[in-house]
Structures are given as C-alpha cells and as structure tokens.
Length: 275
Ligand SMILES: [Zn+2]
Image (tube, rainbow, N blue to C red; front, side, top):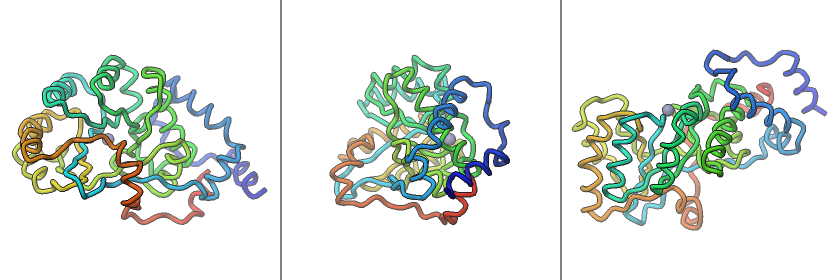
C-alpha cells in the first residue's frame, strides 16, 4: 500500500531530471522506458524499492593468479577503437568494452567485430549521464536502453555494467542487479583520460599491476593505445594473462567475496522517495 502511494505521488510530481542529458526522442530510450514502466507494478519492482534486490558488484578478481582484466569505457569510437582492436588482436588479448548505448546504434559493425574477436560487450548506460543524480526509473531506463540496443545487434544482452564516471549510489547498484547486471568497478586507474603522455600512463599501469586487477581505460584515446603497445607484451612476457570478467563472477569469486564499493550509501529512504 505504501508502495502504491509513493508511486502515485511520483506520478503526480515526477522527480526533477535533466532530460536534456538524454535524447528523449531516441526510440530505443523510449522503448526502454515503456518496458520499465510496464513493470512498475511487478513484485520485481516492489523488491527493488524495498531494497531486497541483492547487489552484484565486482571490483577485482582473485589475487592468487597472474591475471589482469582490461576494461575500456565509452564509445565505441571510430579510428582509435579500431586501432585498439587491432592491437588486442595482434597479441590475442581479450577485453571488456563498456559501451554507450547511444553510440552503439551508429557503430553496429564495430560491435559485431568486437564480439567476433572475443571481447565482452558491457553496459555503460545509454546517454552517459551521472546515474547517481537520476531517479530510480531513469537509472533503470538508462541501463535497459543499452541492454536493448546491444540485444538488437548481437542477439544477447550484456551481463556487466559500469556507471559513467564510476558514480553510483545504492539505488544505481540495485537497479543494475534488478536487470541481471553485475556492476564492475576497478582497482587500477592509470588515468588515461587525464594524461596525454603515453609514458605517464604506462608508468601508472606498471605501478598498479597486481594479480586480479581490473584496469580502467578508455576506448577513444590514442595515448591509451600507445601505452598498451608496451604494456601488453611486457605483461605477457612476465607471465600475466589477460582475462574477461566472466571467470571472476563464478566459482573463483565465491572464494573471494564480492567487494562492496567504498562509497557512502545514501539512506534507503532516498531510494523510496526517488521513485
Ligand atoms: Zn564513461
């Protein structure tokens, strides 16, 4: 009953949301919104609002093997992403690409190529907003729209997501889990978006190299590709293996419990009032 009342109140006065960040005319976003709306009365949504959806979160892999996971946010972009794919192929290295749904729609072939070359496609929201600033419905819609966009091209949906800028609150994590997504953070951030100098990025990649690292990089930056031209062969020579996040979610992860993010969770009331 409380749930219904809250829902009614939110329908009367929708949460203030910067719609400008989204292209509300995007048919995929509209479709995602319809699907989320259609499920508002489901027990699924009630569990979500009540905070009963278990958070699936991954910050690093097991530390007992020399394994590293390369993850690339944003895009897909044009030439630079092709250069990156070429480099990964040269060394037979697979990575996880957290793609932006809106950009995927214009780069269908690139997405197909990524998958054909053994990479994992993951969800980085539809229009790259700050999810911590969105209400629950918009957060669900952002993730759902990218699920739909990727499904339309590849015939299956992503299993992992990462909120833009790593910005998240408990609502963001629960929304992802409700859609069957594991939220992926990182424990190695060489800051390729901050530094133009590949040497600087390489230095920071080396500094943070440790078993089970999830490495945060970006798919549209030439300096990232340059740094990786040295980093990848060097890691392989040292006996490291580059892996997808998959193996880290199953059996092995059970021995290394999922880490909760070191962020301050907002009160659960915030979750309720935001719907
Ligand atoms: Zn991003």
